[in-house]
Length: 503
Figure 1: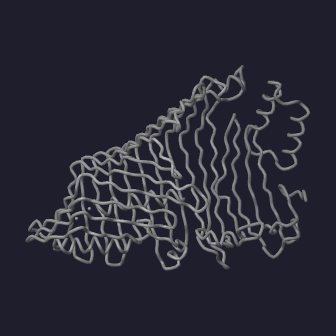
Figure 2: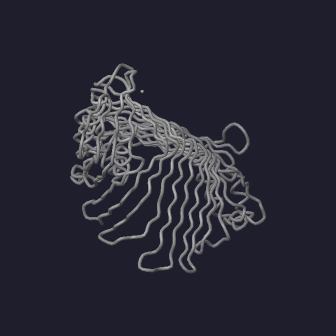
């Protein structure tokens, strides 16, 4: 999270210094709007000189800076020229290259200082709108951010890293209500990294990540969007918010590590990817997903020539209240791993005769509920004050979807429960639950038969498993189908399976 704040702050600095297009504005008004926005974002601006010649305003040696709780960024842009175009808009021309320094100094950790050069190719910016709500439109053939220096805890390290964006186009608008909305696209983004082991060692790391069709959209409070908020919990209490969506098309990933006889290689690709983050006083949500994943790894610590894994879809989602509350608040969690398949070499070790189905596996879990959390999510001091065994009091839980499919079996289910936080005795320290869980299992008996025939499962253990399934389930419609309805009565402590009391 701390590194994420620093990256967001760095990105915001670039956007603020190069940016998206309707009433009239003058060159002086646009420059004033820049300075006002910088102040809202927690940045400092100091110009070496300002000169106005008719409709052209020239700013030289613009020093900028920003500080967050444990990070800072600063740099100098040699020249910015604001030129009125006669149609109520202002063209903005910047130096094609400038340097900045980012310092990350978390409490109790090593200080990291990174020098970065920002270079643009064919950047064309136009400002329009009104003095109270200036919009910026921009296009560029390319932009490159290169690491020029890396110092960790006073020691200089060799790191060759670049991020290249091609065919950029975007816009952003800064309103008088201290909010900002922005969007940009790029035909591609390529991250390249090379690092040698310090002190003359033989180790090297090379990595290349290539993303096509990058798209970023965001809106929210100006200070939060720029990463200029030092006390996030307090900012949320004041009504600040932000939401960001990042998507990309086809992507490739390549990582190589070599150190003498030790080596590691990763070669992967995805068809698409999506990251969405939203934060307000009411909720914090984080969603990430990819489709068409295909990864191959090999290395000296892997007992096979290589391991290949494919997955049709991966998704993870989390929504939590960001603040402590005496009243229950909504939360949710989701995990999707669809159509997961592994290399036949691995199957050959597990199932050399091919007796088990090698169909792709799937896991889907989607739950939601209500709970009141006992700490503020973004306040470390508040989190440290929580002494209870559970950081939250859960009041309701809905299993909206459960699906696990593998080796010819499938388990599906759903249910709903409420919890009595005043009754911690009936279920031995757990809030007394009341509700129903419905489950359906197919293919279990066939799997047990196959495992016994493969000598992977003793007959007596298979029999024990069948008896256990018989206790909790009954035959359903179709061959090798078991269903179960588990009911829990929190008031009495009774648990029943298909109407038969088991506790």
